[in-house]
Amino acid sequence: MKKLLLLIVLLIVSKTIAQNDSKTAFQKSRYELAVSYYKKADFKKALDLFHLASKIKPDTEIGKESIQKVDTLKTVLRQAILTQALGTWKMNGDKPVWASNQNASSVEKDVEEFITIMPTEILFFEKNKKTQEKKVIKSEPLVYYNQHESDALFSDVILSDGTIWNCSINEKSDELRVINVGKTSDNGVEKIENDNIERFYVKVK
Image (cartoon, rainbow, N blue to C red; front, top):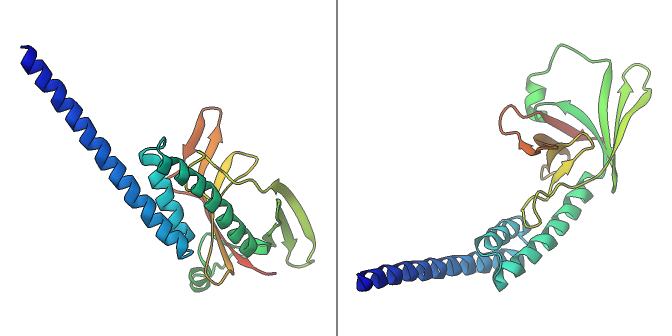
């Protein structure tokens, strides 16, 4: 009986060691791949891989180093997208420019909606088409959203009403796409995965 118990314990220990060795090897491979993308200045892929490496075994040296790299890369990528985003954008609706041009609505609004993005603030305003009069609707501080320190989110912005918006800009830097991906409340974060509100903006200056 004692020999059987000892054998079971040895099997469990051996399995645990094997799993740990497998995790360590996988973490190292993800980290090394992340470093290679980092050296190529492909920061988005590097960020995703460092994030993955940090989640596998957070307490190892590689795990801790990966968390630091995630924080650094988020800062770099946020500065890059902010540089593209600075300026004034006109809302084009819930479809990209090429699609809305082909499916132009016969219903014309009296006002056009705009946002002006500044380094620390987003200004929302309307312009009357006939009078060209501008009216400020609201202003929001520019606050990036982080659910966790080591997450790979770098272009999510949270507004004062708790809504979380993922922002992306096309290669020409002339179209901004925002998608409502979540909302914070007293109960935590509610992810929105279906029927997301989506808006497209074209840069005017």
